[in-house]
Length: 429
Image 1 (spheres, rainbow, N blue to C red):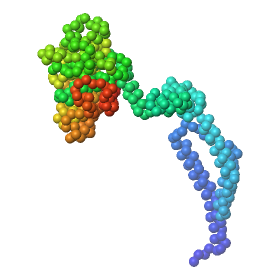
Image 2: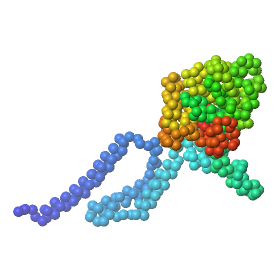
Image 3: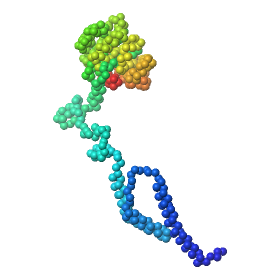
Image 4: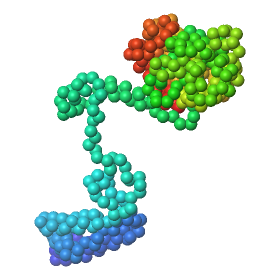
C-alpha cells in the first residue's frame, strides 16, 4: 500500500502541472528555434523577396495565438478570433500581392499585353515585331472571279462578297505553285523509263503543257530519244527542222528568234524540239550533240524537259542526267512495268544519282494494260518509300490515240493530274 497522504499527492500533481506548464513553452520555443535554423540553412529557391509583415499584424496574430495556448493548457476550449484572423490574413495577402506585382522579373510583356498595346519596359528584339502584331487582323476577302459567287457579287453591287469557291481557290493555288519564279539558270528535267509504251512521251507533253500554260517564262521540250522519238507528233508542226539541224547550225544561233526557227510552238506556248525522222540520223545523236542543244537552250529558257529514250546506258542518257535538276520516272500500271521503273531507281542510286532519286516524281500511267488486275495503292506505297511523290495519270481517249493533244479538251481529271505533276516538279526545282 502507498503511504502517501492525500495532501502529498495533491502537492505532487500540482508540481507536475507546474512542470508541464514550464516545459511546454520550452518545447515550443525549441521547435521554433529549430525551424528558424532550418530556414536559414535552406537554399534560396526564389529571387523574389517577400516584404516584412507589419508589426501591427504580427501583434494581432501573436495575441490570438497566446490566448488560444492558455486556453488549451487550462483545459478550456481555445479562443478563436475569426474576424481578426481573417483581417490579418487579408492584409498580409494584399501586401504580398502588391509587392509581387511590383517585382521586376526582367521578362518581356506577354502576347496578350502586346496585342492590347501594353508597352514594354525593356528594349524589344526585332523578332518581336511580327506581322500578326502589326497588321490589321481584319482581312477582306478577294472578290470572286468566276461562277455563282461572282454572279452574286455583281448583282448585289458588291455588297455580298462570298469570295472564290473552294474549287477556284484550289486552282489558283496550283497556278501559284506552277508559276513560281526560279533562280539559278535553266532547270533541266529528264523524263525517262526503261520500258517503251508506258506513256513517257505523253507524260512529257502533259507536263510541258501544264507548265507553259501558267508560267510567264519559257518552257522547252527536247526529244532526245536516239531511237526516233515521237514527241513532235503530239503537236501541230510549225517547222520541219529537228535537233540535228540545230546542232549543225548552232554557230548561227545568236538570238531567241534564231532559236525559234527550229522549234514547234504549241498554243499553250510550249516549244518543242523534234528528233530526226531518219533512224540512222537519230542513232547518231549522242552526248556531244545533246550538250550543244542544252547549251543553246540555257540561253533562252527557264525550264527544259528532256524526253529520253529507253536505253539507259546510251551516251545521251549520261549527258542528260549530269545536267538534271529534277527527274520524272514513268511507270505503267502493270506488275512488270512497275518493277522496271523501280529497277531504274536502283540503277540510278548505284551509279551516283542517289540525291536525284530522292527528288524524283513517279508518274503512274493507269491507262496501260493490266492496271485493273493489280493494287495500285501498293505500287504507290512502294515508290513513295523511295522517291519524293507519285502522281496517277488517268485514262483519256485523246491520250490513248497517240497523236495530237489539245490540253483544253482533255478530261478535267487528266488536266488536274498534269497540273499536280507540274506543281510537284516545280516544287523540287
